[in-house]
Image (cartoon, rainbow, N blue to C red):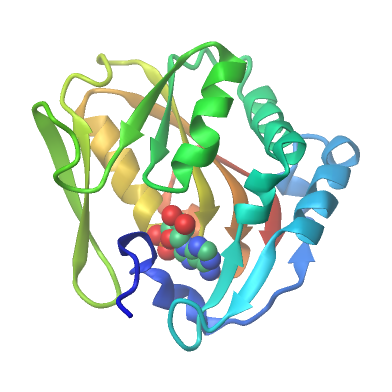
Length: 209
Ligand code: AMP
């Protein structure tokens, strides 16, 4: 069966099968406050080996979505991180960034900007292509999605190699927006994806190192 488009870049994450989460003090705004949330996430997220391809250690966040209290706490924790940052909108990446992004936006009382796979948005779009292990993929946003200079917070479910988030940042910047931060439920720290997001505050609720 063909891999879903949003997981096509997963082979980069296959270099490690480390499934033990770690708590990095630098990752958390307040470790004592968020540690219970990271523990709840670690207990809820399911690691599925060899999905969608052999060698991939897939972090399945759908049980987090099922537990609406936990999903809400994730949104509140991410919103709290940027509550003083004058965020003008939250952007989320299709598809799993749509689970969480609108909830974070609601917490911050701002709008949500969908970044979508090619051909989904009906009006004039901007597009960015990025490298996968085999071939390329693209993301699109409506050209008028954000106004110049606006502070945007980017949200996705998981940071692996950082290629997807890097592409989304470049797309948002094409609209003239300023991406001030990138928030994730999970970060595969051993892949060092945050290094591809220089100048942005990267914040994750659960890290696997
Ligand atoms: P990357 O561009 O390598 O940072 O990959 C990030 C995107 O791919 C996110 O949208 C994730 O949903 C997905 N992804 C990458 N690796 C994994 C993984 N090990 N488990 C679950 N999703 C993943």
